[in-house]
Length: 212
Image 1: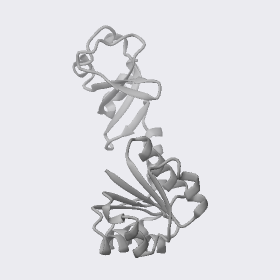
Image 2: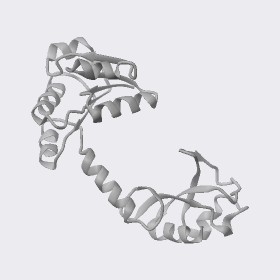
Image 3: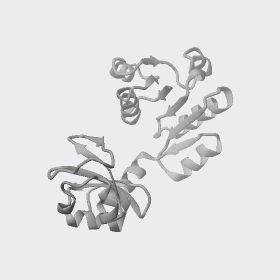
Image 4: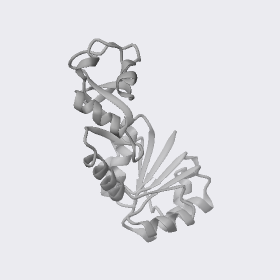
């Protein structure tokens, strides 16, 4: 998959470098030479051009991209211009645009953005969701369903991971290994020091946390 990030501010830089770390082919473009210099060794391509120039975008092959991320949320006029240009004049399958408020989001969707993200708002919601849960949450999937992690409940030590469902009504999907998660099979025998990752309804996950 080929991706292009337009705008290498803090948000764009983080998106582009993380996508690259995840094995994606990423082109980063910006009209600021210093920003391009800061990222040129961290992505597949880094190009300094006028990001609102249709011919310049065509020259670098923007229409060969599978996804274009317009990362300049603070400059709404420029985001609108680039999103409209990409939608009307290029055959990019998916355009994702960053913005800073709901009104701007609605406008960007109207002119053709396939997805509009509000990073600050979404991060605030995620933080509030996690803080409002009475257990260690990895993420809240819906208001009533989450992914969480806990040490092994005593009654599960020495039993297969699939026993989690019959005892607590939740599913054990993996175990934490430092900063990563190792997927485990239903037949995995749970050990005393395992920190397990569960999926299920919040009320049931709270029961797991109290048993661990």
